[in-house]
Image (cartoon, rainbow, N blue to C red; front, side, top):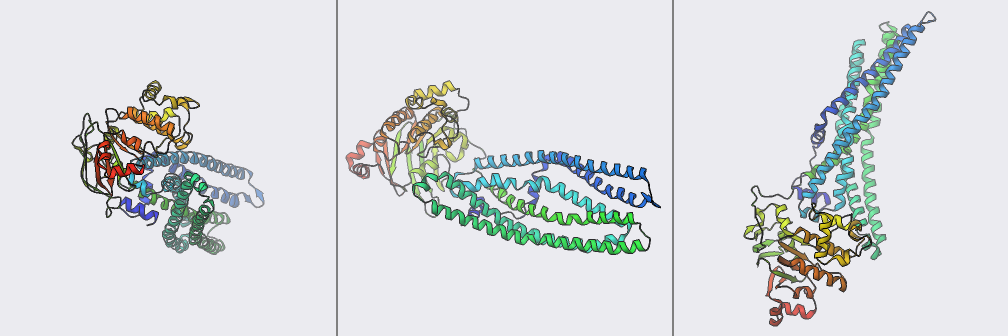
Length: 590
């Protein structure tokens, strides 16, 4: 499946090809400043229409029998100057008002996208590349500005100029307007055809841009892997191929839409030709004066000018609508839902039970099938097994990052599906192997567990967990910046920060997924001591490869292809000589 097909599958709907109404609806909260902008456009158009009248008066009455009527000429020049000053002044005001509207509407849309992304299920991120999401919230939102903010006032200006020019031309000679009808009808038909083709072509270009952005984000985040594998050349060739796809789609879009401008120019030239023909007849018959003819020339240009401007406007609209379709597809993707009547679990002791659980990332190939496991409150249990046996899947299900396709998971007898997700996750603390830190200091990352905690409280928690020897030794202590993703800290130090963060959250159930992997022996000792303090009095589910961690547990469960094949106290399992004993003899817990 292509990336877009994956997004459609996750959203459970097709890309909405009729997105214009929803796009314009985004600007509804700003209707008052938009009305002010529309009023400014009306005044601007009026200032345009009055200018030909000043010129016509000078031509017809400013020069009589070789005498210049200086008073009239000066008055008309003053009026013309005032009209131009009004035009430039109000145009600046219109830009300022439009800019404020754009900032509010687009930032509100960005907030909507950001808030929605945070509430999407984990399955969405497992199947959608981060670069595509970034493209939605950044480039695609920017592409909507011409459609939402600038498009309607520009279109209003064009319509006012065309209607005003038509009325004045009809008043001078109805034949002018009747002669303009064929070009206008042809223009309307042409716009309809070009607009449908343009949305399709620019939609393809937007998709190519998303793929390129996604690859760029992956390359930046995985640059160490790329360099370590000396795969820069292959990665660059892949990027060039994506750029080639983008170039071809952009050229196709420009080629398909590029015919509109010449088409409009032909209609414009035809309109001017009709004006000269009819105007010459009226002038020769004495029905109009030279000054009125000059006004007619201005009015026809005002009538036909929007024909050429519409090409640029509709190209921007096609690009914006293509981007909007993808934004709305993301916003229409269903977020993780809480039950309509969530249960208040009250104080949680931490007794966990999985009964008949069936789950597979691909439902046709279950990882767990009929799985059953009971963990008494306060027990420290290790889950071991080979890669793909279902260990990490348990973590995903306990936090409701995924929902079981059959069976139930309960905590203190309450089905997890009946709990509010935020309530559940405040009671279950998770420390993963790929721990996540955010840009800021160590204190900033610790405060994520409880934003109300003061610095003194956070420092006390670090000391209580025994992590102060490592964390206080950092260059600036707990005020040390962790860098992007925690890159400024070692893996073991990052893991200690995550353990302290879990300690501050004070969950009833603790889930540790490979918490001591990939660290040196000295750091492992510190982490094991912190784990012992962290697990005290809590139900603890530990997924580990390191036997030293496993042997400290009250109980060990061995998984194989989603089934429990060994279960008991570590010493008893070693004495029994079963699957766990064989793992122990091999020197690993899975």
